[in-house]
Length: 325
Image (tube, rainbow, N blue to C red; front, top):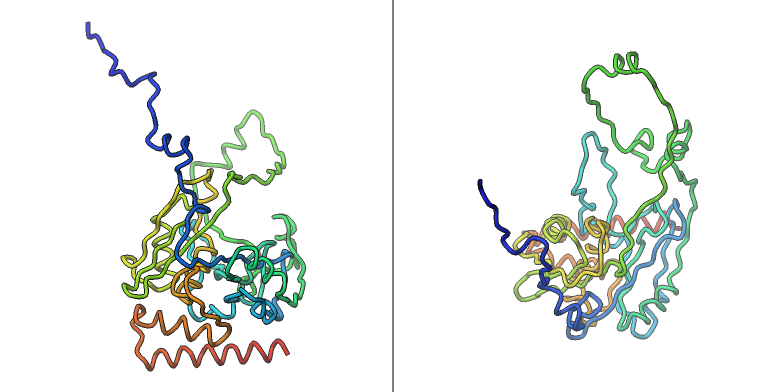
């Protein structure tokens, strides 16, 4: 007879490595982090589920003392790639979107502009001064209405609102139904479910102008996905991007996704050299030139390519201004 002896670990409480810092108050969350001369960013978000962005006037926000910069989707459209989809499914259609909405919002809370100021309170005050002209469009709020004939399409390049289609086979489904003793048909409605941690999401970025690297502190549950997606979206080599996760105040899977705010803060940081560091005040083409000149060496752009990109951006802005008028 073989006697199995306990290793002493089963059923025994084991102190966690992080307990000392958490219980003593020494753990550092994203809100506890500071950098020299750090500025603060907030986002202007859509109050409606579906609308055109006809115009954005950020002049009053920049005129506020302590306001440093404002970026909109049209400012960044030629500087970053669309947001990547790390977890694609079979048959999924392309539904591109950027870190900041460019000409259309598709859900309540979609980021339209990032506002940077000396303090979070000034950033919030500056945000209130931004004027947006909305062209409100019909919204589709549930699956059945989105599939109805004539439903408002969220993406003009798609024939309908179906996100993806794929076919698969497993066994003889028709025969299984025919031979079943009981067949039950019901319609089930699933309520909205989401992770709601005590700590919200946050991101801090610092651009090293000497080494050409980006360090990002993020409340992400998937730091390697965040690093890869940041590198892809910004056009920066992966080995130049470092993502650090501080103490996390809960996540429940909600912080596993790669969010637009991580790109917007990092891009704004390239403009201001480091998130919250620097006193540059840029908007429109000035902002685009500042970012493009700093990113050109990393992207391998020649002087001719840089000029061509800026000319394309200027033409895009000119078309947008005619559209606004």
